[in-house]
Every structure is written in structure tokens, then in C-alpha cells.
Length: 137
Image 1 (cartoon, helix red, strand yellow):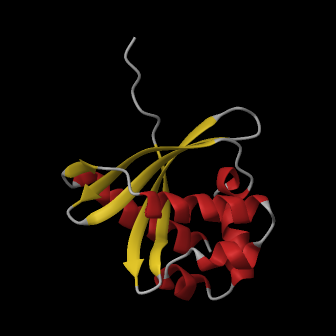
Image 2 (cartoon, helix red, strand yellow):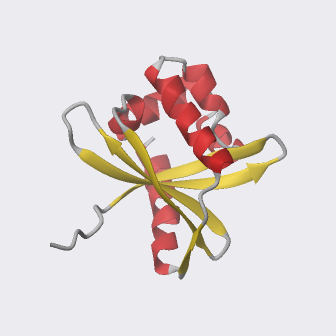
């Protein structure tokens, strides 16, 4: 499980070295991510699984294994508080929706959701915890 998480983190980390372009918000992408958050909040693991890309589903093999990874590796996604969409970025054609999640203790987490378009619509192809944005005084 840790190897899978490390492989996903490395592939997403490589995106930060690529030139980025900020795009207009995409309601369809935001709807998929919000839907997965809602499914996790409701304890609907099978429904949350449906928002994952075929690649992610192949890596984890079952909704239960996927849920275990999310619960252990991304507790702010497993039990999110407030969720705000920051921006949609393109890194050489790879789309990443940045999201801010406030957890139950009031801490802010910044996540990058890599998205892929499938015949069934947009799906989540990986999530990376991002550093907090710089705030000018």
C-alpha cells in the first residue's frame, strides 16, 4: 500500500516541475470531486470508488482496499469538513484541480486532484497533498 501511495505521489510531484496554465473552472470536474467527498461523508465507499479512474481502480482492485488507503493516507478526504475549489491548472495537458479542505480540527489542507476524461466522464486519477500557498502580508 505504501508503495502505491509513493508511486502516485511521485507521478503527481513531477507535475510541479512542468509549466502550468490556469484554466477556467470546470463545473463537471468540480462535481466529480464534490461527489466523492459527499460519498465519503456518507460512508458510501462503493459510490466513492465510482469517482476513481480506471487506473486507480486497477491499482487498488476493490472499493475496500481503496477506502483503506484513503482513510489511512488522506484522513482529510475520508472525513472532510469544508471543501473549497481553488483553481484548475493544466500541466502540459494534465489537468489538476486544486482544492482546500478544512478538517475537523480546523486545519487547512491543500490537495491537487489529477483528473482524466473517460467515456463515462471525468474521473479522479490521483490526489497529492500540496504545500500551503504563500500568503502576502
